[in-house]
Image (cartoon, rainbow, N blue to C red; front, top):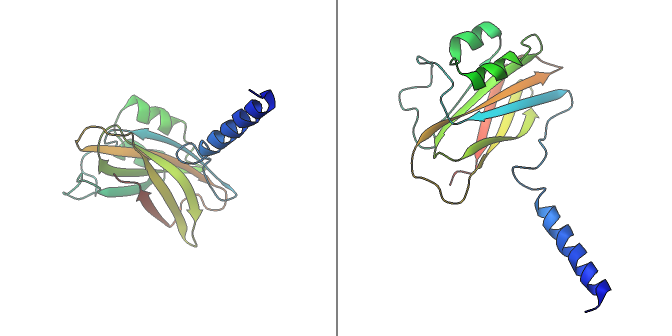
Length: 167
């Protein structure tokens, strides 16, 4: 076989496959200038009982989000869990807020923050679902903790969330 043709074919195959890796959950997060974010996903309810979610939560594809603007609210509203505690401890509430995004869906799936969009009076979070092929037919609460640091506005007046990718 011609060595040059073989190496060219390998290079094209690697380049084509490598381009596919830049799309989807591994793609870079899109945020406006002056905004930085950090996230963690938990397949658990991170809010204490008595939240304002409503009695129908969790239901399939039910969604809820809330803003936690200070450490006292975090202590009051978030469960005492090591994973949650570590994320909250790393939050400087003088500069940042936490946004809790929750939904009801199957286990083995994950909420992934894809983009943050600055609106006139707040923020819009674009979240996707990273879902493996197959999986159990059950219902779990999934929580995505999002730490937002915005140099222009510490606490947004409004937050909206769009979750895409239900299977």
